[in-house]
Length: 509
Image (cartoon, rainbow, N blue to C red; front, top):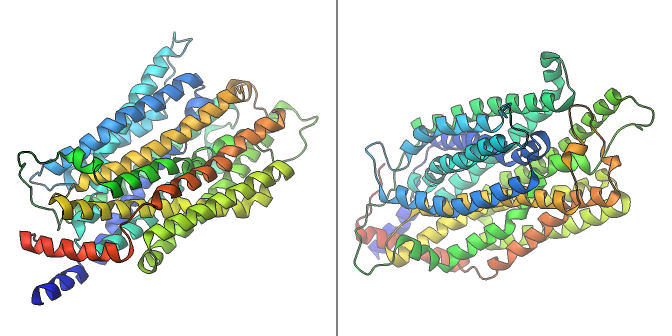
């Protein structure tokens, strides 16, 4: 009886102070800024600004994800198996951050390579930078999101750390959108022009540098304020014991979370495809008849900014609002039920969004339903990593091993797959409707969305309406088979606490 009471006390004990929680969360904010700089803008930059061949961009994204399927778990295994004198997870933050900063800026440099009429050299440059960015980002991302496991052994406190840090990570992912919106009001006065591709290139350079400086400072600062308290002692390899990867592939709850994450990849379209929809699905502005090319360019740029802002606000309000409520919701409701209900609501909203756009061609009427569509973004981002941590608890209980970094690698792979799916989906849509960006955007002319067929407008809009909706419907299916919830999860936590006590698991205060 005394042992049982001690286990309950250990389960309820808290370890993380307010300052540490805030510093970790602000580190997540900085990381969110940098990741959003890549995931939300790279497709527009490659396709519309650099105007690289669509097939090249498609193959680059696909092959990079194949490599990530190897690289991310490999990084997780490396982190789990090694301990340095500076800590298990912390050193990677300092080591990887400078390289990520440089590579993120290089993504948007677009060097003017001479004697390259078919853009071969430019494609090699872009491919090298993109693949290297993904590899180095994994070196920082996997250890960073392993920290909630190491900061505290308390499951409820860990959930609070995850939900609170994800709030600020979501804020970070929205900040590049804010900067992108502000730049057209200040940048033309500085550079002396707002016309053509060269101005767009300058915009991306300024945006990337601003985001990288702010994001890197916040991310690196977390290193000095977070503590590794609950790092499991290394376990010796026993002959005949399953390997790390085999433990993952035989853990049904974790495989269901990974399947859910992959099937939910379409939710990223709302953010990633927003700039494409703004360019080619809607024109909001005065009649262009009789206008000069300069006046048309100005009107189209304003329309693109307006439409992009509408999607920015919908994503921020929907996603951030949901993330803001998650700490309370996670305390009162079962993770599984939360995820299923919000995803199904997002799917229904997407159907209304699609029908309204087809029958009315009015973006403003769609806004309430786009907002509802964006709610699952915050819910899935927060719950998926919290549920992965629960799966790690389950694996530790069943095998005696805790592979924190490998669990984080699974989350990183899900996020990267989602980003790649969004970019690939956009490219496939361009190819499907026979669309050529160079016909719409060049140094000489910028054409409005009204120059496209209405079916082409609607096809582009479906990237942020129907595609995310179907993705949310599909991702809810694996959750019906997920069992680590309710009383079963509570019992698992009590058994794990007792097992840890029996093993002599200690926590550094």
